[in-house]
Amino acid sequence: MRVRQEPDVKIGLRYRWQRRFLTWINRRAPPARSVTLDQRRIFIFPSRVGFFFFLCLLVMLLTAINYQNNMSFALTFLLTTLFVIAILHTYANLAGLTVHAVRTKPAFPGQHSEFDIRLERGRQRDHYGLRLAWPESTECVINLVQADSVEVRLHTAVDRRGWYNPGRLLLESTYPLGLLRCWTWVDLNLHALVYPQPLASADLPGLATQHPDGAALPISGSDDFYDLRNYHPGDSLRQLHWKSLAKGQPLQSKQYAAYAERSLWLDWAMFPGVGTEQRLSHLCYWALVFERRRYQYGLRLPDQSINPGMGAQHLEKVLTALALYRGGSPTG
Image (cartoon, rainbow, N blue to C red):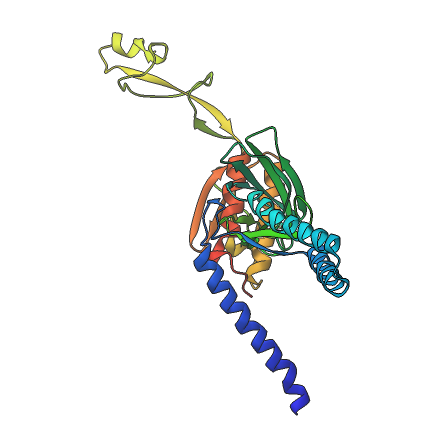
């Protein structure tokens, strides 16, 4: 029994230390859309090469003491001074940088979402070997030399609908000698929207329509006469019905019509007995199909309704409503 409990104890201790560390770093570097790096947000520590270099200095110092060799003392102190100067230059390579959150790109589960950030230098100082990455994203190494700012795009795989938070961004550098690692973790409060996974269904039962096929709707600018209505200030002179005025009747305006295509409704009730996530996936699939076929379509959810329309903006509105249904938390 004790052997089985030891791993649980280790996991519990690790979890508590992680909680304490996250609490400490959130207090030291709270989330923000724009972060300027200073001594509170920058950490510096010897790298593996730096530890090996320090070990070599220790061996050289012991050798110099043993043999009482002045040249060995001089070389050891010179390299130690080089190590101290490297600390200042490594820190200065990150100090003064401002990291801005720019934009994100929505994605479907299984795809890679795009996160755009911008690095801006606050002083006329060059920055070299800057490595940026989120815990589960691609990484990028850049130099900020000729321009005052540069945009960086990182890709991260997403797996579930709703808002995806990539975590804290790692920005680090070992410039100039690689003896020290200078880094920071910044939370840019950047979230990417993840749509439901499109799932095809064999049929679309109970398809509701707003207008029958070939229904005539009043649309300004059409050439097909539809009806007369009372004059409203601002009506075009070309639409005035002068014959009714000549007969002593009130001034009227002509209405023109165009034949509207069928407006479809994607309804939550179309898939009875199906789980929440599967319904959202089916509705997402048919929204993409209707948009590809250039149909006008609307969406009815238990807590929201979107009028029929089409186009990229309408599709984004529909997919966003599906992604954020019940707060974007997958349920059964």
